[in-house]
Length: 379
Image 1 (cartoon, one colour):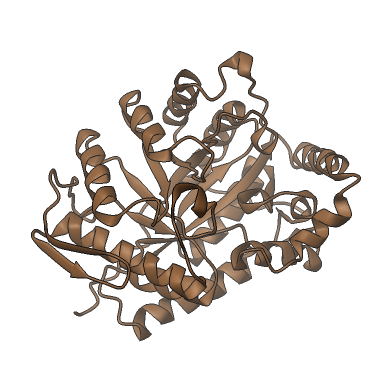
Image 2 (tube, helix red, strand yellow):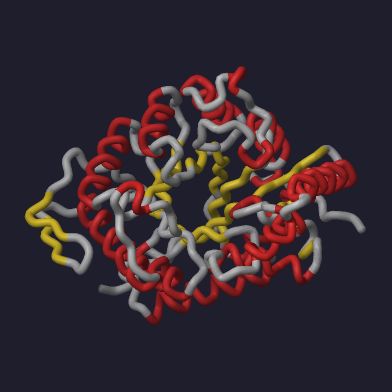
């Protein structure tokens, strides 16, 4: 098949938040408590309502065994909101492709086309839900099959597929997901920085998500993925790119850095006593490639580019909490715009306390990224 025309990357970027899909208080320093109803549907729906009210398109809902089932939470939040788009993190193996294709198509139809999907291939407690996974090559081969088959089930009828990991015969999903121009089915987002992960993303995903690497790292990866699209013969619309990162925003640059450094100091204090073992673990071979890339950034300095803070990764910050964009709304908007200039058009931002930062970042940063002139950071 020929490669379809590249999407226009000059379209308006999309901005999502992140909701802590957990019943345990204190996620990444969040201040919500059991007395607030933390982890209840009312609490989560309240956060989703704030997401709607403050300019966000929706929010990422994380997944791992031992947390609330992400798809169930997303379904409940869709029923309690009107424009909230859940980016639902799911794992091949936890789901079979046909089961997931049917569930997601149903929710997409019921919600008027609000479903987005984040495919996660990172390690999990697979044995606890009866899944078995081999080495990295096996894991990503299975993910590739999953994504290809789900997309076929959403867009074709009487699908027959016999793969190494999954198979269906004469399968038709009903109801179908909502199809709109430029959106034939729910978007498939995917992360991963290893060579195997990038080859899957270059051929199968709609949006490649990056952690908060500096501009040179993201730019280099975008160029490599574009090359893989060509060399691997991608037969889907061109890959789009997204950034998942923490954004610590205050009224002034000075106030933001003061609060960021104080927050990291508290993280360091909490690590006191086992900090050496924590750092040893961070440098061990058990980290995923993308996470290790973030941890290695600290060797280049505490602050990279204009305001990318790497110190949190030294003291237990993981994933999107490893690096932070820190500053005034203008500082952070300027930094995000530079990612946009590289080709990033999907942003998943967050900070804690979630309840207050949804509004602070949404009201101060998003307007600057939606057409207003940015003021370059002085100094």
